[in-house]
Length: 58
View 1 (cartoon, rainbow, N blue to C red):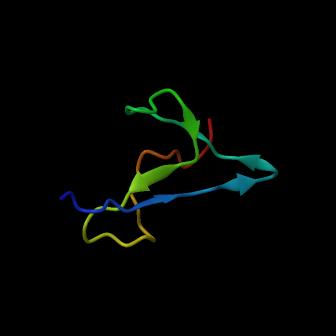
View 2 (view 1 turned 45 degrees about the vertical axis):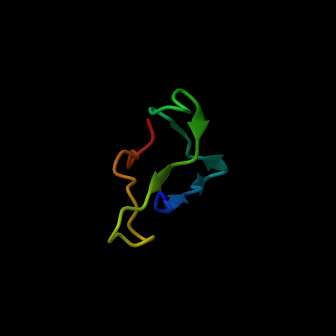
View 3 (view 1 turned 135 degrees about the vertical axis):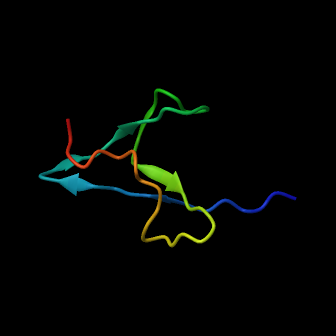
């Protein structure tokens, strides 16, 4: 049996615009989505793996 995988997604809205990221891994590579990531064992939901999210758009 595989262990459950927890994940988080962030919906970021500023000045009426939403932050989207282009997925880089299969199966959704190339698709746009809200920033998301898996929560690794020992991490809390407040510090997910959004390391690849840009701090500033552009």
